[in-house]
Length: 193
Image (tube, rainbow, N blue to C red; front, top):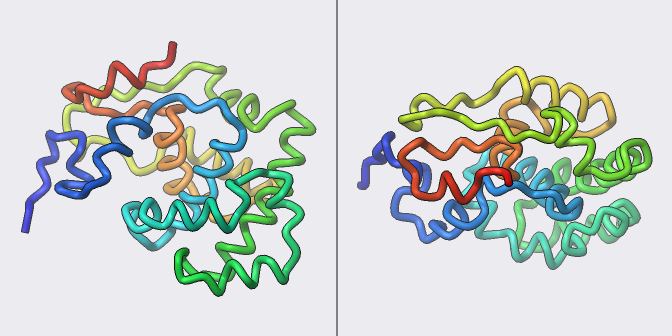
């Protein structure tokens, strides 16, 4: 058994082959609506599960959910969602799969009001990345005032599987929050430019 070192930013995956996700994706600012929606859906799918599990299933989610195209997901009929549920390549939780459609419809409404999902989400931080100053993974919070505010607003707009802890994980994933440790060699690459 490998013991995670809390002083290592990569300790959350220890020896897992998903180093590329940490190094190339996690914490990098995302401004593409489709990618933001994908990460929101995948974080929601991870409720009660490990993120590692969801990343391994990401290709199947992309294949089955129109690459997370918001409009196509919003238009998915029940029969198509039921077919998605039958595929062993994803986490077959009915509420989570059906939430993709309802969350896509909420995202459409957000785009109508704010112009883009990007403008809406980054508006919570006035377009400026929140940068953590953590020395150890033990210091990194699991939720913050920001994640509680975004979560509450998303829920009010009809989204589900967006509690404050999952929302914080989402904010980290898409670089609205950069929580790479001070010692992490990926930290600078994830800084908003």
